[in-house]
Length: 119
Image (tube, rainbow, N blue to C red; front, side, top):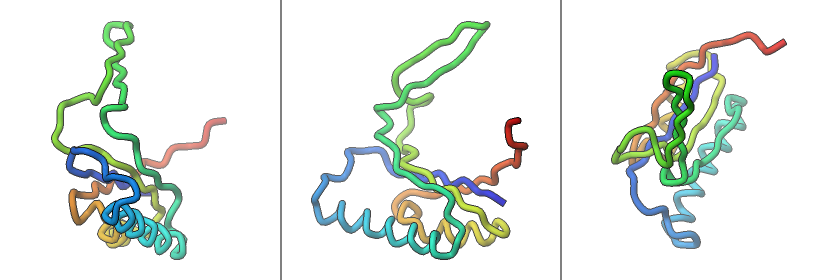
């Protein structure tokens, strides 16, 4: 079963590149990702640009409405995602706990609904 892990982090300025905290944080993510890859569960993962770079699209009464920014004002942001394939939710939760976002924010784990491949 596939699980999407949404990595929620407190909103705020991004870490300053080349700082000790930046290097330590990304080393921790690299280690977690390497462990998941080695175990054969990691399908994909990536950090996201800051929430200020987002664009929201809504369609109302057949009209497309595009606005800058997130869909809602929040104090936290989705900072990245990890897609895994695990035997069950318990295994996915164990991997989620290894992701550094779980220590400073939280990791939301959601099962992916299987859909047939497009023909």
